[in-house]
Length: 236
Image (cartoon, rainbow, N blue to C red):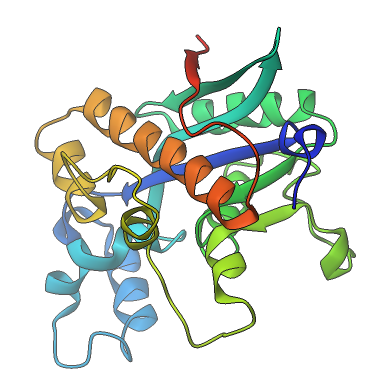
């Protein structure tokens, strides 16, 4: 069981990603070839052009981050708050740099995401390196032993050692009676909301809902004593 001091040192986060170009045809010729080569065993009979809008967003070499939402618990005058902040926009370098600056101020914090070890954490690290941004300590794993890496993954916690098991955040929310964060859009729609609707605010709201749900699911898994309802504080 986790204690209140420990839970106040966890930064819960989620990222939303899109393809770096809206269409395969808009990639430079060299990058079209690189995409075809990268995905040749995954797409089977599907053409590189048809496969691009389906999978480019989840590959850090061909996608980009358009939103990072994060939050942490804080006990203020005997009341629990969940402070949440989002970095979002068209300029990936700017939002990544701002997120790095936040992490540099959160000494001793661990990062928590759902499937974070397979997706969010490596994706953030790869895109930072792409832009020449120094990795903050919470993402720099070089030379560290597994138990020294300050990452928490709710999907890994739920596996209990069963490495064949994949469970979505949506399913865990339903299991624990937590309202679904997928009441407007889901991850498969983020690309069209970004490239076609140009609605970053909608993506940000969706991402923040995921972070709130993540924190609630975490509390259920670790059986924390935090109340199920807590005050939300948006940090500007």
